[in-house]
Image 1 (cartoon, helix red, strand yellow):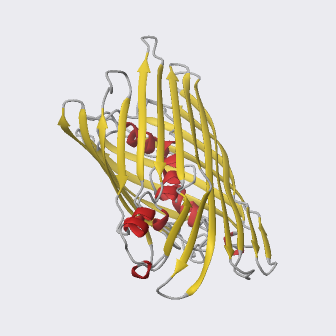
Image 2 (cartoon, one colour):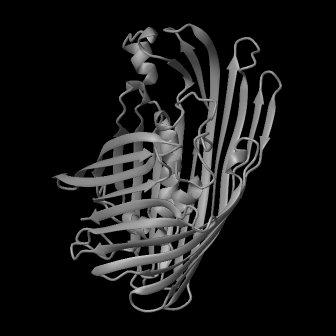
Image 3 (cartoon, rainbow, N blue to C red):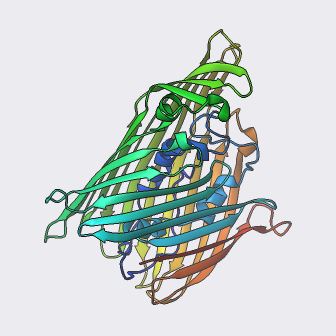
Length: 442
């Protein structure tokens, strides 16, 4: 999943049916929280699968090279683009970035709402993620009751659509927003999800034979996930808080069709993030942000086995963003962040892995973003990473130049294409990949 801090690029303007990112915005953490939430609600979409030794976050892949994280941060959607998308209730956006000869990262987001009757709306969400951490196609459909029951809250109920029936999740949400004439605005979003909600019903009540599935899950406790998001803004700045946690799930995993040894699986995930943005003047906006996501996995066979596993994963980051407006359409942006990816593994044979991974990322960008017309971005980015024992091939220092251009249409649709240039090897092999993005909200 993309747990990284996005860097700045093309910012779209207000369109019919959607609210644009504020002038000088430094971005949002809402989509970071969405990615972690998807790691809980769509475990089937993890690159190595639901039961892999790589655990829940699955941050390391042998196919990754030393520039993979830099590709994510410089080739996909930027921080202003993410905030614009978060503010829209309907729209479509697509991004693709080449990472090597055989692979291209590609991400698709689609949101649609259809009035049903009175205060009731039908909404659809679709998320496609193709990367070296996720292989996801996740549609979700739900009903929203606005201002229910006669108050300021909106109630939503949705279900995640899976080909594997027992993986379906049911989610309930309560949300509201309010504001004051002085420019203060606040919003809160509360969510509760039953993960694999129909698993025990399908196998225990409907009589589905375990042999019909590759793996059979028998939950002792149905896992519950909770999430909260709060945002507040004024003329002086903005604050975001995000958090979530799951109950500890206990599930017996058997393999009737293959006869593989059964085991007991215990899992728990939590995450938290915050952003504080300060508007110093009409030209200068600064922000501090921090995130952390943790996952604990325990696998125990009936008899002591070398395949027993205790796994503890964590990804944490702190960052600084700055936005300096040089003119109405021209701005400088700065992004600095540090990220850690510790991981501890203990296997049944006594093999212990203590992985420590530290990364520093920085980027400075000069970008032109007109309300309508040609837009461009010129940036310099670097990454210094000391990867641990799980991925020593990722340790490197990389420097990169990013060049891209695009067009913003009056309808609000925009398209951007760009090239990334390697500054470490001079003219020996300068080309470092290309990328393409387009989006529209309505």
